[in-house]
Amino acid sequence: MHDTGTGNTGNTAQPSRRTLLAATAGVTAALAAAGPARAAAPDDSRLRALVSRMTLEEKVGQLFVMRVYGHSATAPDQADIDANLKEIGVRTAAELVAKYRVGGIIYFAWAHNTREPHQIADLSNGIQKASLELPRGLPVLISTDQEHGIVARVGRPATLFPGAMAVGAGGSRSDARTLGRIAGAELRAMGIRQDYSPVADVNVNPANPVIGVRSFGADPRAVSGLVAAEVAGYQGSGVAATAKHFPGHGDTNVDSHTGFPTITHSRELWERLDAPPFRAAIAAGIDSIMTAHLMVPALDDSGDPATLSRPILTGILRERLGYDGVVVTDSLGMEGVRTKYGDDRVPVLALKAGVDQLLNPPDLDLAWNAVLTAVREGELTEARLDASILRVLRLKSKLGLFRSPYVSQAGVDRAVGTRAHRAAADRIAERTTTLLVNEGRLLPLSRRRYPKVLVVGADPASPSGTTGPPTGVLAGALGELGFTASALSTGTAPSAATIAKAVAAARDADAVVVATYNVTASSGQKALVEQLVATGRPVVAVAVRNPYDVAQLPSVPACLAAYSWTDVELRAAARVIAGRVKPRGKLPVAVQRADDPEQVLYPIGYGLSY
Image (cartoon, rainbow, N blue to C red; front, side, top):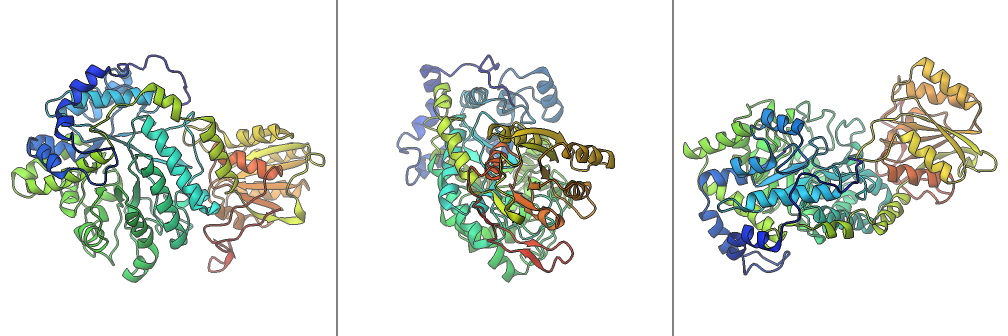
């Protein structure tokens, strides 16, 4: 992920003009009159003609978006070949496309798809070449989860922006649009044309284990505006945005990756709280919407997850909200969609509910054959498949994949991780850092009075291909700002011995910065902060994930919310601590009192400055 080399990746080089023309001749001829990449309306008659020439097996394949291991479409590492054989029954991405004719492929860092931008571009080109050279070959819609903040699959040297809740703290629709525009341009340059972002969930539950800082906030109106702005940015750069997770995942205390959440909102509350961001996304022309693997009894009392609910996906999303774009499931490997039905039934039921793209089934062969059998036995009609395939082809046409399926290395160099893009990310981040406590005007921290700073605290695994660990990034940034700074990692659950070591180190420092991560009443992190404060040294807490930490730290004299432990947000927090920039962020969620959660300690919109 951190490798920025551009050596041999095992993929073929950028295809020649002759290869490109040969590979795309069939589909390009069929769509010759379709116009530019973002033409007002793709030519449905030509797309329907493509569908009519497809075999049933090819149609089934077009509905699936699948993971595959490896940095190369044709020559992945042996370990990735072994993983592919074990999980999918093929050796490479090229074989996956040839065997199942999948309409999409999703990239993951853990699948070794995203080592560095030039390799990603080569992989994308290799996948397109493999698909387009098949009989009746179609371009592949390549996707990923590039939310920014704590969830991103493409890391540095690509530009990494603050996450959604940080953007919510900044409150700027212009910044959200800029984020989408730049991030979209970089993804497109690497051959990724569909991004599973933005998160449209309204996070009203501080205990939400899966959404949290991935949401713009708790105010549906503010979330709606930022969702629409980010959609406009992404899609203006020629990348399909995806609003997720319909009908709303913001008020759960169960992670749908590992369990089956239930949303207890009434229909009226859903309309007022959860629906507005999705309505805003639809009004903004959103290209795709992702489903949630959770139950909403007020919308469908069958006990089925929304992903498999016809009343929710067809009755509400299609008919009531008037959405006719692509509907993609969340990963079909998640427990929330597998609790009630087997892996063979899930894809069939999702299609019957109104889904168009089936994302990442745990067993592709089982799922693919289940859909095929359902059509042959009459449970699904071929016309039902055709309707979804047409939506997918319309999106591919809109994104220019029929005209221009390949990307170039020169395009990567022009777009990805440029100095201007990184500077834009830094400027946006500076507008997000939120100052919650500043007793005695401790901040900004004076270099003259407090020249020697100790940085301690939680060091969760670095997200998104960033540098990490957080304590090291903070110390490095403060060092660049003129402090003498050292780092001591104490972890998310420091022991008494670790706390004692940190306290001893604090006595040799002039001030202490402590990174906190989801502090609870019984957390060792809370004890760490209390004992650091007891030394008499000035202590500055930086909440590097959820902003709710401040409620558990009543004794700390200064507290900032950074909303993530990615480099761009930690560097911005350091500049705020040093007084290089003023804190401008405002809480996009309310923080309740720790001793009385019914009482609000800091309301939405709260934030101090200098």
